[in-house]
Amino acid sequence: MNKKLFAGVIAILSFLGLALSSCNQTQIKPFNGVLDSVFKTEAPDPVKKIVGELGSDKQYEKLMDEESDLVGVYSILGFADGTSSEGYGIVIHKDGVWSALPEICHGKNPLARYDAKSNSLWLTGGVMEGTGVLVEKLYHIKFHDDGKAYIAGVIDPYLMQEALCQKFGYSIKDDKITFYAGDRQLCSRENKEQNMGGMDEDAIWMGEQLFYDISGDDLYVYFIPGLKFVTGLVLSYEDMPTLTARVTIDKDGKFTLSDENSVIWPFEGSFRDEDYGEPNLDISYRRNDGKYNVQIGIPRLTTLDDGIAVMGDDGLEFTATDAAGNPIGGLITLKGDTAVVTFTSTTWTLIEQGTSVRYIR
Image (cartoon, rainbow, N blue to C red; front, side, top):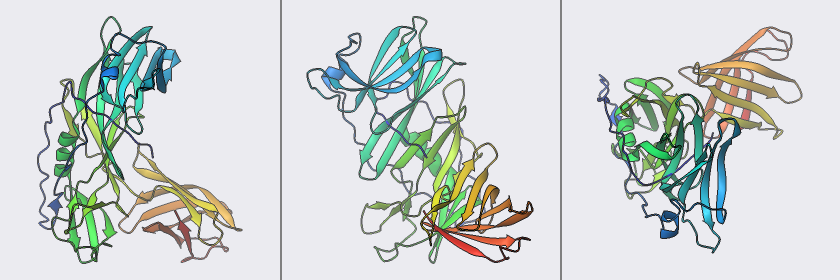
């Protein structure tokens, strides 16, 4: 899955339309906080001076170059005299016109997508980085009649995290943490951290992981809940799901979070067969319909490459076609980095009902 970055506010999109989800399950609690802090620094003077002074002596990293639309987006890496950009400065080239946006922090993994229909850019930028920390801003870039680019809007990460806190919740019972969207259960995780300070009702935070997917026509925000130890401010992300929501921005620049596709399950990815160490299980999420593509390889026996799965109460429920051309199905469960494929419906003599195969991420 792909990930992002930036800082500096020229236009903050105001937050609208998200009320607390009605819920009759009193055990569901909202997440207990947002960012503790943001690492903010100001763009260095050499970067500020690039406005109107673009030239070939600058060092750029190409983020996007859409020749058909005559659009290019670049990160400033540094200057001919060896001066660092300190992570700031985005340069946009369109129809022969160069524009500099020095206030945008491009951080670890800046991404850009040009929308030809609206003649605008979506851009992710970083506002917070550290060990295991990634927090991004989403920028909407538009163009004046003379071709100059400007920041038309940006979603502040604090406002986004507040919105997500209202949309998602959790409960803790015994050794299980369960996540919800409103009153709809999404998934459960084992509570592995009870021996590291204990858990209380303030244990789950929004966390310091927030990023965007701008690759398609729809915009999606992702976050990973943080496990906050009672004895300190350390956040752990081990074995947590990645939750997501579709972001809708209206003509006035106000955003809301859709209920559509409100969780990306941690089943996604490639897994190796436990016995042979070969990549034999691949699971990918289909955003258009909320299902999963599943390819299952059983070493020295067969490959099921047309599997389709849906999320059930106990895991991914899949169906596929066996080597004889008949339907075969089962359940995929995940505990930590171990996925177990159990066949619950089969007519093929080489795979009996109840057969299980283990895979490691």
